Length: 202
Ligand code: SF4
Ligand code: SF4
Image 1 (cartoon, rainbow, N blue to C red):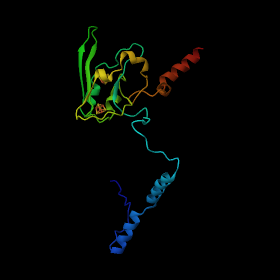
Image 2: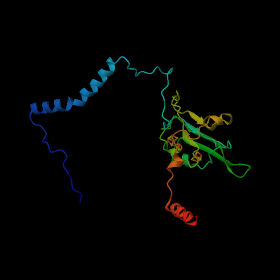
Image 3: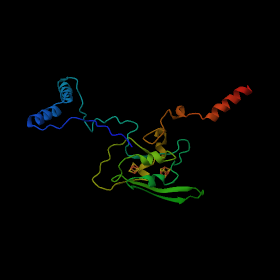
Image 4: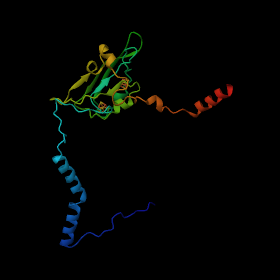
């Protein structure tokens, strides 16, 4: 049996004055005045500049921000990375990904269309996390409001244009590997053994 621990043994106040004292104690905590002090300090500071003049000024978005999705191509060949496995479609919590596939002339599966209903998407990132080909990632575009409840991004909108391939950054967006991912690869015990063996041979 687990042992229960009382974290608060104070008896609740009974008299009105005790209740009032508790009210004051709970309401005016030092944190309140610390917070007010910070606000006041920023108000009177001459170099204080927290207001951005949007849309003339844009927010610097972190690389791992989960913005509008992108479908990437293989940099070397320009081929589409998406292999139409459907994992992203299956895992999507909002059921907002839809895709069509067909058998290509070369006998390989091709993605005819791929759409995301951005009106339903909650930008959870699961589709990007699960993609085995690093084909779908989240880009940094955060200006995606719409007047319609359902609005779609189609394959042509999401996929890197062939003539813009040189601008596609290999490690871009949430769902991609970090730039230093190769440095983080951990060697298995077998690789240490192999190293030892090769040393012995030398
Ligand atoms: S980010 Fe989440 S909700 Fe949006 S398409 Fe991907 S899995 Fe679905
Ligand atoms: S985007 Fe990735 S997970 Fe989705 S179908 Fe293509 S390869 Fe599979």
